[in-house]
Structure formats: C-alpha cells, structure tokens
Length: 317
Image 1 (cartoon, rainbow, N blue to C red):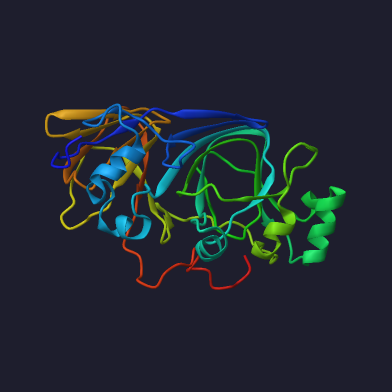
Image 2 (cartoon, rainbow, N blue to C red; image 1 turned 60 degrees about the horizontal axis):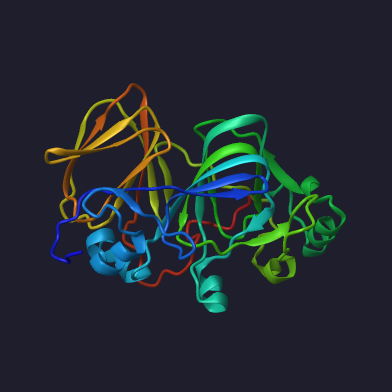
C-alpha cells in the first residue's frame, strides 16, 4: 500500500458471530477480535486496522485521529435478536479510561423490523434504589422494574452510558463508539455466562430514565458520532470543503449508488459504504424507490470533552 495514494469509497465483508439469542453481524469494525476486510475500493483485500495504520487521517480526518489515533472510531452491527439479550450497562468514556484504559460506549439502536414479541428494555419505570435492583437481579424479578418499549420499524433509540438495556425479538442496526466494553447485569433464565453486577454497580443510572428518542432527521448528535436519516428522493451532490470527517452511508431501504468520478459503489438494504475523508466530491444517487439512508460522521469535539452524555440535563424522562 502506498501512503501517497488517493483513497476511494470502501465496502467491507461482514463478520457474523452466533449468539444464544440470535446473531451479530459486524458490518464495519476495528476491534482486534473483529477486523473488517475491504471487499471493494482501492484497498480491496486489506483489513480496516491495516488501512488505518497506513493512511491515518486520510481515512478518518484530523478530528477523529486526534481522539482515537489509529483505531477506526465507529462500529456498525446488525443484531438479529430472536430471543432476549442479557441486561447490559455501558460505561462512559471517563470511567472506561480510568479503570480499563479503554473507550466507553454510546450507541444508537435503529429498528429494522420487530417480531410479535418485540420489546426493548430501556431504563427504569420509576427511581429504584441500588438495594432494590440488586435483590431483583438475584430473585429474577428485575423485569418488573424496567421500562418496556414496544418498538416499530424506523424508530431509533439513543443508548447512553448508565442506561440499563436489553432487547427481545427484534432486528436492530447498532451504531456505536468503537468499544465492546459493557457489563452483563442479569441473564434471565441462563446460568452459563458471567455476570458483572458487582463490578458495574456504580455505573448504573437508577433514576426513572429511558433512552432518548430522537426527533426529526437528526438521530444523534453526540461527541462520539452524528447520525442523520436521509430520505433520498433524488440525486444529491456533495462537495465537502473544509469538512474532514469520514462518512458512512447505511442503506436502510431501497438502494443507493455512491458515485465518485466515473466509478460507483452500490448498496442495498443492510449494506454500507464508507467514504474516507480523502473523498471530497461525490454523488448520492437513489437506485430504487423509497431509498432511506443513515449517514454517520464525526464532528469536532470540545477540547476538554471526555464525557459521553453531555446533553443530559439531569431531568427524568
């Protein structure tokens, strides 16, 4: 690979891992145990970690490189949940850095489809004490404390650090900070997996608080990522100017063609195209009716920011 090379859009091969409740398909990830391989573009056949090591800010832009170094800062997963996941909590950036020398995890769940038993468990119905929660986890009654949402396709939920969460009978796209640091608090009827309740106890937000439900086309605007929902009814030309971020376009419905010069990268539902920051001029062209995209980018972060949920005003919702 030549470090003088001008980069083009990239597509990646999926990595699928079976789980007790279904499967996880990593669509783009640089996590060590998962390292996405480019399937199309000028760097076809190279892994994402190798691409990052060689091209650095040509891939992600200066803002991302300053914060995340040579690790690609975003993971995108497809979660096919047939049963019920365990109950989790994610740490914030500050706690993760101090305790584990790792990144925390903020995530967005985008609902692709929902089965007849679909539920999202997001936070608590009412404020609970640490003692109440611990006891409920031990005696199996924890679901009585949890806020239950019946999701519909097209909905999005922002999973902030401290929010207990689980999902059942639903298919999700998860867009998250490049971290798989999370803690299992309860596993329902399963007895064969490690529980991290004591380790994660002080990370839990015990207030009556559920996931933020984004309004409009801006699904998330956090230090870790910005996500827009785009209904692509006609061709859209982009000239990025001083914008130095990478872009990820996830096809939710319809089909898309990303055109750079005379070349095109196509995506159908469930597929994504990543545009390195090197790519300045391009067209987004709908290749089918009712094309909907999720655009993922990283905007500049405040110099002193290490907090994962800066927009939380402390109110209960």
